Image 1 (tube, rainbow, N blue to C red):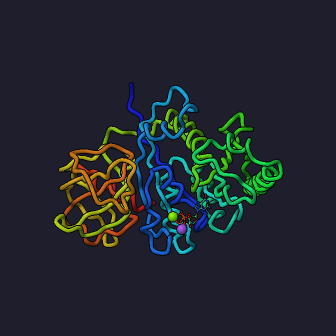
Image 2 (cartoon, rainbow, N blue to C red):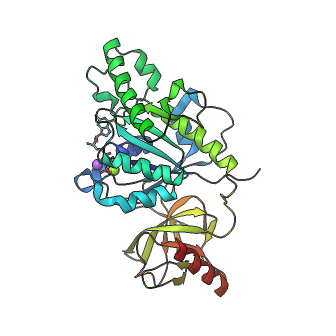
Amino acid sequence: MKKLRTPIVAVLGHVDHGKTTLLDKIRNTRVIAKEAGGITQHIGATEVPIELIKEICKDLWPKNITIPGLLFIDTPGHKAFTNLRKRGGALADLAILVVDVNEGFKPQTEEALMILRTFKTPFVVAANKIDKIPGWQSFENQPFLKSFQQQDDVVKQRLENKIYDLIGELYKYGFSADRFDRIRDFTRTVAIVPVSALTGEGIPELLLVLVGLAQRYLEKNLRLHVEGKAKGTVLEVKEEKGLGMTMDVIIYDGTLRVGDKIAIGGVNGVVVTHVRGILKPRPAQEIRVESKFKSVKEVTAAAGVKIVAPGIENVVAGSEFEVVESEEDVKKFEERIRKE
Ligand code: GTP
Ligand code: NA
Ligand code: MG
């Protein structure tokens, strides 16, 4: 059987609506605690193995899932970081649009939605912070439908009203949307999954809808390869003690190997160098804050890794790169990035 590539899922939304907290809940981490003022300022990446997602979904798990996992891209919601949201959006195969259900649509929610529309990225809406709806009784890590059943009628109605507001907002932008359990055709209707990133309620269903989208998306998108020359995007360039210059990257296509020659787009033209080392974060760990990397010989898309390479001092975040074998390849790469 052909190996399916790990889908890239961007998490987008307005500042403080709960993107990082949602990922922390899924990963069982506390990345938000390491952020200055709780504000995300960089693109993050975390590979979550399918077994972990299956564990969260428990008995709801469907058959026939063959994707190896999901690569989650965390993005900043602060208005200063439009370029990072765009970059995250451009990389994504799929997305989660996180909206604080109590606040509804905000400027960067709309901005994120525009990005998704531009790239025609399939997405699911996480209607977050349901635990803050007045009168809500929390049932930790329960599926939304189980928890919802146990709420008072007046509380149920409060949530329904908030969801209708979201449906209305999405409609304004040309999307037909509904609560996930009322949807028959997920290719035509955007699913809204009520969740709490703090209590974990609704996360099983959120992941189920996402995995369903991912599976369908990958099966029909033949442009996604795991074999062939690697292509990627630079997230951050930094000097690491004992390693020298490194760059955190997302490989979105192909396979990268130690020793590969790569061309990287730079402010002063293309930099050609070679990969001296590839360092992988542990599974379900955020590359932005990871301290224990594992040295590997090769890595297959999609993945977030640290690359050790000489001569990358002037490479800037956001640059594209790809494996090159000849002068011809370098020229083709130059043409590609000039067009973008
Ligand atoms: P930026 O990356 O800076 O845009 O923010 P973010 O969207 O990643 O939100 P973040 O995870 O930083 O959460 C913002 C605040 O909301 C934090 O204080 C979280 O604890 C809180 N929060 C997030 N999700 C929930 C939730 O489901 N319920 C409640 N009550 N609080 C939440
Ligand atoms: Na925040
Ligand atoms: Mg964040």
